[in-house]
Amino acid sequence: MTERPNILLIFADQLAWRALPAHGDTFAQTPNIDRIAQRAVRFGEAYTPCPLCQPARAAYGTGRYPHETGVLSNGRKHHVPNVPEALPTAGELFANAGYTTIHFGKRHDAGSLRGFTLAELGQLPVDEAPAWPLNADTFYDRHTTEKAVEWLQRYDGDAPYLAVADLNNPHNICGWVGANAGPHQDVPVEGPLPRLPDNFEDLDLGRRPRPVQYICCSHNRLSQAAAWTPENYQHYLRAYYHYLARVDAEIGCILDALEQRADAANTLTVFTADHGDGIAAHRMVTKQVSFIEETTHVPLMVAGPPGLVSEGRDVTALVSLLDLVPTLCDVAGVVPPSVMRGRSLRPWLEGNPADEDGAYVASEWHTEWGFTISPGRMLRTERYKYTRYLEHDGEELYDLANDRGETRTLVGDPAHAEALAAHRALLEAHVEATEDPFFNLQWMAEDRWRSHAVGYENHEGPAAPMVG
Ligand code: ZN
Image 1 (cartoon, rainbow, N blue to C red):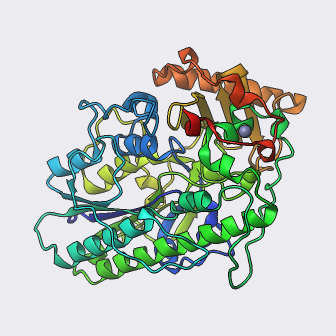
Image 2 (image 1 turned 90 degrees about the vertical axis):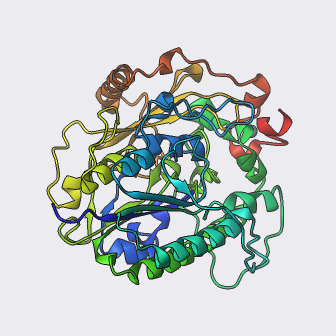
């Protein structure tokens, strides 16, 4: 085997796959992510194991589902344990294999960064425009980039490295929602506003599972957006693209530093995100409860040494962020522990796709802070997406081949009854195979969080986490 490659893993936080020009967006300005995309294998059908920061991070850091790591929420009223010591982490595997393992930036990992040297965290000032207020997300990113660049300029160890730049943006959009809560006048911005997505109005909300119908009651951010006009949502999108451009600029600095290194040609560069953002689909802001494409489908692109990643191209195989660590292990000659759920994507990097018959990916939801509990599961198969929630046995089935915007659930449609039955059976098999306690979990939502007429715009007042 040739010299083991260095690996640079760049994470964004809350980046919907379809907000990127590499996946068809025409408004975003992301020249630096595009730099990676141009020479990367672009996995166009990649999913997060949970559309929420901490459970997602704990899951892909260990290659195990949230129900296996025990990290089901972001905390507060819901206890979050550290990932079990018995689950090997990416940092441990690579450190034990002789790699230098260094992590910069956002953690929120519940112990899944064990084995990494954690670079000092800090914040640096950034000038802001009135329409796009900044918070710690952006200030941390500036510092994270500076530290990562310094390290890339300085590191001259004999050992290959696994370096992670964990950036927050476009997550600053969450703070933007808070700053624009309720009815408001938008701060004027120069230039055109993005148009609203085709699936902005959710005409099928009345047929969706109850936790999805009432996200506004369980999620501070959607409750803050309940009174927004369509134009307010356009400003939300404009702000989202602004925070995306900010993280893109940070990524540019990191890529510049990488490219100055003598060993740049022997470095695998991976770009992905922990989960997506509603980006106004179904009137959704940020992320919570539902498994819509915008929040659960993430970018994943891998650019690398010639011979390992021969050329930039699009891949349509269904993949999961749980595949990330097994893939990195494979390209680095590290034996991945058999307990990891994911599979190595190396065959796709090399242009020799593996057999995809029967492939599916799964995602999970439990709770954000513990004020409502809505256990849910999602399966994505080649053509369909199936979801199941325990509350009132809610289900959805979407034909993604013909309805990528998930505008019409096919539950109850005789033409898709067979597909529905097959996906119910697949979920039961998945639950059994992964020792998932899903069907024995309990949902919890007081009547007051399920009381108004269906429609996020009908929500008034606080959401459950605001009143405890
Ligand atoms: Zn509500």
